Length: 162
Ligand SMILES: [Zn+2]
Image (cartoon, rainbow, N blue to C red; front, side):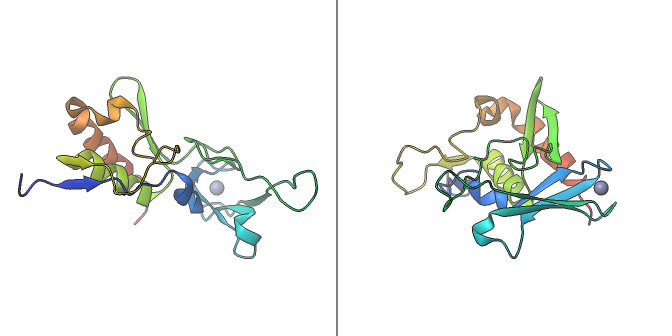
């Protein structure tokens, strides 16, 4: 398949996408973003900001016993791990399932995976932790769902400003 669109698993999990998460604002239900506070040590403090209503709040990872480290919750979704707000990019599809993404880069990755004719594992050596792509549910990998998934992703993109 010379001209087949090819997708190679980049080999990472959800974590890189937690740098910016699009969520529903707790005050107005509009589009808000959760980002690392620029002045925070290793992203320890996260900030939720809504440009629509001006709501903003912050979250700081609690210090662990012993006092010199802290615990950042793992990323699972479809909620942000800090404020537990539902993600903005989320839609029902394929019979009761829910497609979701933390941000546009995450949605782009799913889009490329779903649209690809050839899906390849990356070159990395798997060391226990599943990649985001490996962890996708079967209904997202099924060829029969491809058209509906592509339409759902397009619908989600249309909810974003600009
Ligand atoms: Zn708001």
